[in-house]
Image (tube, rainbow, N blue to C red; front, side):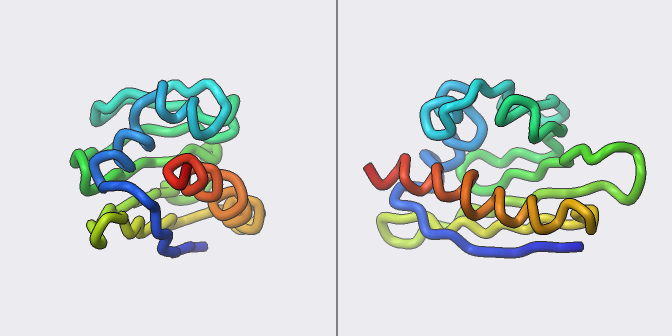
Length: 125
C-alpha cells in the first residue's frame, strides 16, 4: 500500500534536511537517540529501532530516499521526501511506497501523529 501527504514546516529546506539527517538534530526534535549518517548507502535506526532502513539517495536541502525494512517478505518499502521552498517555509512532500498492509494504519498514524507532528513543533518554536 502507498501513502502520500504534504506538510508545511516553518523553516528552510536546508534546515529541514538537517533535521531529518543529522542524528543530533533528530534527537532534539524526536526526544529519541538516532543512528543516522548523511551518506548514501548508510543504514539508520530511529525511535529506539522502531524505524530501521538504509539511505538510498540524499540531495542536501532537496531530497531524501530511504528503504525501510519490514522483514524479508514483499517488495522494498521506499520513503521519498522532497523539500520544496515556499517563502519562509518548506513544503515537505512525503511518499511512502509498498507499506505492508498489516502495518499501514500504524505507519500512517506514526507519520502524522509522531514523526511529522514532532518535526513541525520543533521548527515552530
